[in-house]
Image (cartoon, rainbow, N blue to C red; front, side, top):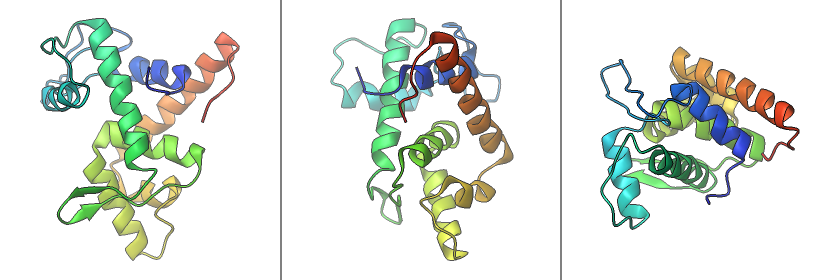
Length: 166
């Protein structure tokens, strides 16, 4: 529905919850469901997608639809300059491979943290459109997450005989 590589979507779900629809994070943020969405993120997506039904975090189909929709939104946010709030905007990422990594980082750390990392890379004279340039300014847990999801995606695509869509 959202034009996101199915192998990437499955890899995110695997990394987030091991495909458990009843998963709740223990990190203090209470992310829920297969895609471990925050209630605030899900609420924003419900509004954006004009859902008529209420948010049900443990409804696997709804959580997956919203989670993949959020991943699509992050791809869109980082493919063009996007104003996040009055003092922070994203820097466009030009290649599909870089965009995927940046979107994964934002799924994990939030788009504001990734946009801040882009700004820090730029101030350090590095190309903020490259994941490797912004990675040092992201939490180690986010860098590990991007690597893990990328590995899962490759394994899923190989197992399913699919072609990677990046």
